[in-house]
Length: 113
Image (cartoon, rainbow, N blue to C red; front, side, top):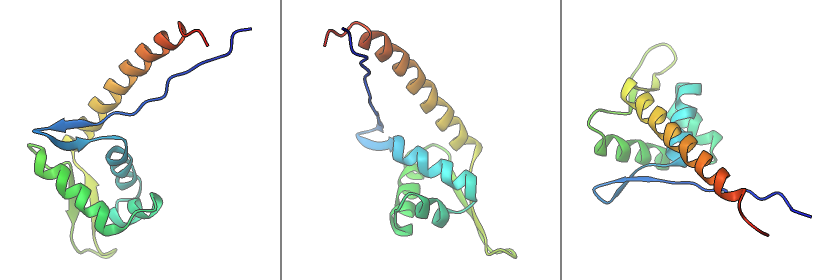
């Protein structure tokens, strides 16, 4: 009797040998979009604010345009948001992930276990 198999994977994109984007950074940007805050996004991921802020700085340093920007001040004390460039990078990441998932699903259907 054949058992169901699947292939699970994750990938990261490097630019100039430096990690640019991957599942954790995309998750962080999703959290920033949800909460409007790097601190809240980090909290959801059980990550320190310092680590999250470093990831944002690293992504922004590699990108041609900032992916995440901070908002200072205001009644609620400021926050952060994912820029249009950041949303486009996320869209491209998800597109690659979808294509790879389709490819791996086809390959896993041929596995003999």
